[in-house]
Amino acid sequence: MYVLPWATPAPIGLILGTGVSLLAVVLVLVLIVVDAIIYFPFIKAYDASFLEEEAENAAQEAVAESATPVKTAAEKVVEEKTAVKVTTDKPINVLVLCAGAGTSAMLANALTEGAAATGANITASAGAYGSHYEIMKDFDMIVLAPQVNSFYEDIKKDTDALGIKLAATKGAEYIKLTRDPEGAVAFVMSYFA
Image 1 (cartoon, rainbow, N blue to C red):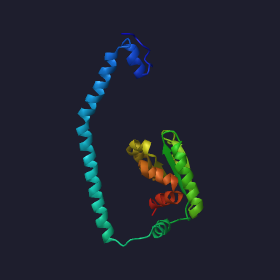
Image 2: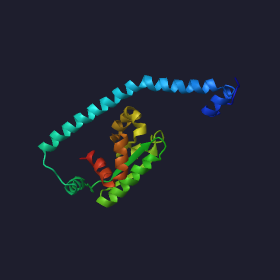
Image 3: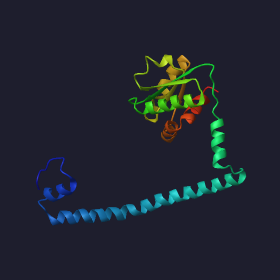
Image 4: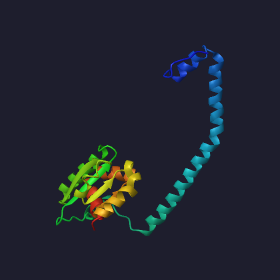
């Protein structure tokens, strides 16, 4: 046996650490096969649960589709775009918070772009959670990015005291909002309806 540096890659470490022992390589291969045999039933059961869930969802969608009239994709887009209600009487200042002000800038930019496209009186800024305490009083709404959702209850106390709206987003929802400026405006406006 040889003492190797901790950064030695595993395949090389296996060969060098055992003195180029063929039995060590055979043992690793046998253990991989045994692990695969042990885990295979669990993977199949997990896959079966996904298939069952997918079948249930497909059945529910089929029932829902038969109960509602079919809309074309163009009708759905028009319906979604007309759902954006724009208020221009009072400006809405939105602060988007994330862990380091990187991803929050993406949503702030989408809000700015959406406000220009829809005529909404919205201004948006990005910030990092923790540095918001001094500036939060200047905003009408704070949107939390998914990585800082765990702080929702802490910041809720502060926003309630100041009369500021607070919204938390989930991962897929947040990504969709950053890619859909008009949808981001609709998201903000839904809190002021």
